[in-house]
Image (cartoon, rainbow, N blue to C red):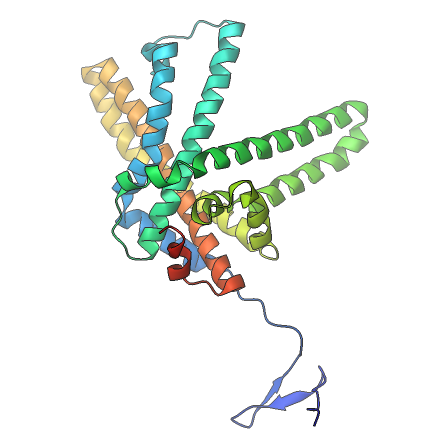
Length: 302
């Protein structure tokens, strides 16, 4: 016997006798849970702050120390004005961009692994995260460069249009901002996918698929996390400025070194915190879309 269907406008009686409206074929979309993500990210950061700083800052130190020797330590510490030379400037710029992209990619993948261990209540140890993430870091760097190049091409095209007609520029600039924010939301999970799922070049496509239907909540969560990271930097900077100024009274070089180190630590905290947030977003979207708990996600690391 065929079971009679319930029309969307009809009401089905519940077990308690009350009426609950039924809309067959449409399932309610589960919320991303921005408040929960932000709360958990702060908890992970505060409990593992030293490990987050090490995991984020160590790759930057390893990549940028050679640059410091190349351009001179006094110039890197702002104790001496750089001698401007176009060929040298372009070479240093290219090397610096490559080093920054490589360092950020390695930091992002390492902090992703750290966040999963913390979420799973496992022991967090920053020194163990670099080896398993070395294979994912080049993929993250390559895809990041590709995304950056695409956005730059869009921006150059808009500037070219603005030189042709101000009216075209008026309509083109909003398009660029839409493309930019869509890219941030859609591609934000790419580092997590690359290191967790080992998806290679398909990590970008996977990130876009996971964020589909949730890009506005993802963008809102990342924006709120950005504001939180600024607050973290301000709080950290107030303390370090006092220490740096005190040290500068004793030695200008010591003050410059402390200023450089404090800037590096503040930047590491910002990057680390944002990576923790995107890691938790990744976990949440896997739970929503695939019903994958943290045990299933962690299993692919083994």
